[in-house]
Image 1 (cartoon, rainbow, N blue to C red):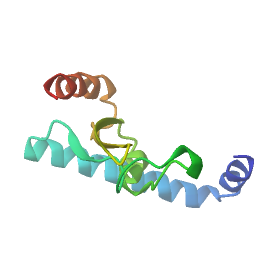
Image 2 (tube, rainbow, N blue to C red):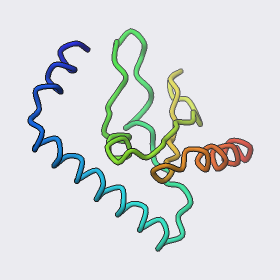
Image 3 (cartoon, rainbow, N blue to C red):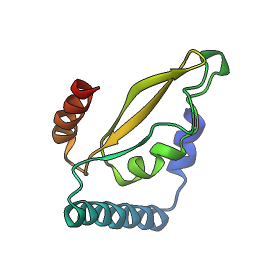
Length: 113
């Protein structure tokens, strides 16, 4: 963790500003698409498969949640099945700044399962 923080502190301010602009553009594009297409929440797999075993000492592949985290969108993962004793789930993703709205929708999804 310390190494990651130190690497982050070493990023030049102009490079950091570029990433922030990309975040803002992505966030606005996602929000615009949600409005245009009538999307209330995004739903996608939480992982590329089951959750990893605890003994593997990792949290799994970050590819599925990465775009949403970069955009600052609230997301939560819900287990929906199991495969060989390991949980298999999906994630619900809301629009930036709409954390409470995502919780309302997720509650509805869970109640319908």
